[in-house]
Figure 1 (spheres, rainbow, N blue to C red):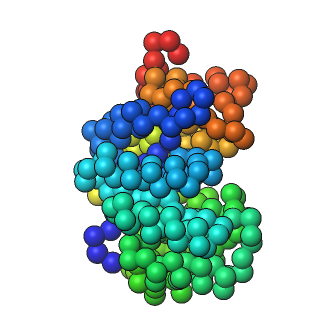
Figure 2 (figure 1 turned 180 degrees about the vertical axis):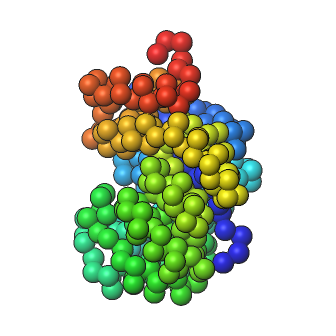
Length: 299
């Protein structure tokens, strides 16, 4: 595969007003901040973007708005997966029509399909919509695990160009690189092991940490991809507490609270998610401090 998207791809949060309305002005400012900081790509309406709490119209409109706001400066990858194959197809078609560069499709959650069902699901969408598509395996969220054998079958399907491995299992990611890396891109979906996956031949990371430390994550990835692993390790060690503590509660609760404390977004988050429990505030603030991130004056 040529022209792979590489590096630090931020799984961007969706800013919301306190009443839950989307805050597109803040969304645009975040995009500008990421582009200026060196982020290599924007992933919109993924897990971190609260896709599960958005309406169908909001989902599609936010992809369109993101493409317009980015204006070709970096690739835009739209989250278009669903546990409903026809809905995933609709989101993928919409993303293509709105000009996204690629789509990220999570394994169908809750329904617990077989491996053959997973294969047919992804094959159907890839053959139906002519846009690059990245598989997304996150069994901790979906109760569904995309096996290595199924991934290998899917690498033969045109338009399937990558996989985000969020199993948290480094050996699994390295096996994907060994078995499939010549045909599809392999992205880490777990910030804490991203450097090791990059060192093993991975293409990048779809990152939560990049929301609060875009410049550091971008630089770490660039160094790792260039083989300058000792320098990359120095940055990664500074970010280690963030990699861990941005998951003290379900993503994106901690990262949205961190961005609030940084003065980057308002406090909005949608039910059933609520603001970070106060018992974790010091832990997340300490992680930000260790990474050298400045807080807003009122934080």
